[in-house]
Amino acid sequence: MDERSRPGPKPKRLFARAVRYGDADRTDLPSARAVHAFLRDLERVGRLIAHGPLADPAGDLLLVRAESAAEATRVLRSDPFRDVAGIAYGLLDWRPDTVGAGVNLDLPPQRGAGRLTLLQRVAVVVRDRRRALAWYRETLGLELRVEEPETGYVELALGKGTAALTLVEPTPAWGEPYYSEALARVGGSTGIAFQTDSVYALAERLRAGGAGVSGPPHPEPWGGLALRFKDPDGNEFLAVQSDTAPRARGRPSRTIPP
Image (cartoon, rainbow, N blue to C red; front, top):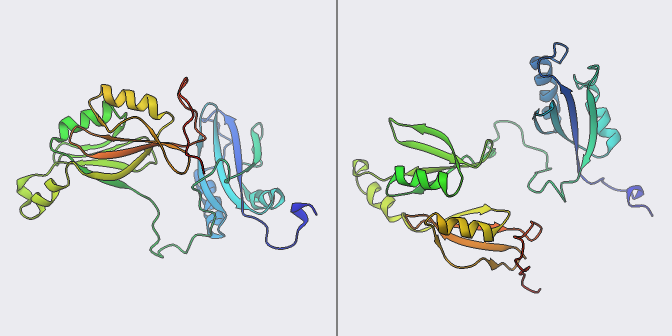
């Protein structure tokens, strides 16, 4: 029997609606109010996954939840972009099991239910914030997201929409026991893991940047490669390369047999 003809609940699937209109200054595009109203309706019925702009050429991307392409088409009948002339409008089946890992397909709870919506930031305690800021930017390649000269608060991230790192420099003005407790956190394991496309290239860059690299990349039981390293204050991080990511040229594949 064909898999699609079996009785019972259909698997959850995602569909990507992509619109390419080229010129963002066009006057015949839907208004922001119309788009927001459409998105609110999708979210209300548990269909909306994500929405955002496309660039080069300009456009609009929408991810929706549906059981089939036919159902996704019905869901998008009131899409304000459908009737715009002279645009590229397409609907694609997106397979989260292969390219969408990390997307939660379960229906979200009602707003105000106390659910967690975002991992916002993680603090790393350092001895010298200015020195650490330069290292995290120049060696790790993090981007400065927020800097408040009055308070010394800084946030760094890999890009927009990602969790941030805050660099915290303890000061005696905090009083005790807060100052001593913060100092005790310097130089320990942060529990923070990064993903990289090459642990070998990263190890070379970290060594050149003065990081404490624990040793060569090592295989993990799940098949990937991992590298432990420390910032100049001794705070330890983990960088992982999945077994599906391309490895550095000339390096052997290293996995642990099952």
